[in-house]
Length: 146
Image (cartoon, rainbow, N blue to C red; front, side, top):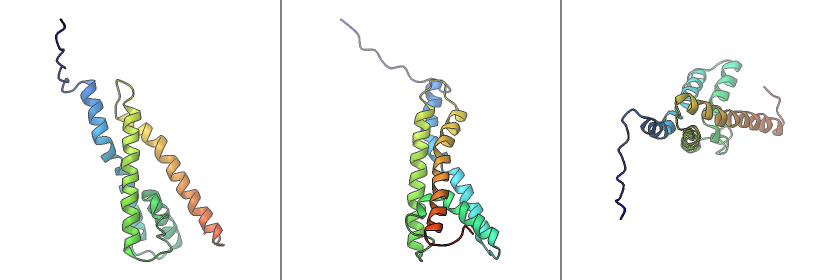
């Protein structure tokens, strides 16, 4: 006769609890770099009267919310396209955070450095892709690079 084995509670500051906190708070923290980029874009575009601030603000804006290009934000007027692009991008960044947290906690002794390393491996291709898409769309429309 075998007795049922009761699961032991996790140690409050142990590796299992730390991995769980990485998986729970990682997706929320994944929104921080896009929020910083979005705030930089808003500051650069507020009262903009120079070309370099406009270009830098646009680049920061599309890096913060890469799915805004899919909603046609530069070409389509109205706040509904902007809000839809921001909401879709926020969901995308949360999913990137979930994926980075899962990849970081594959190791038993995972920490926040592992999370940010995995996040970087996932975010940099998104940023390169959105910048490449913006440049190619600009060239497709027959304009110069600036």
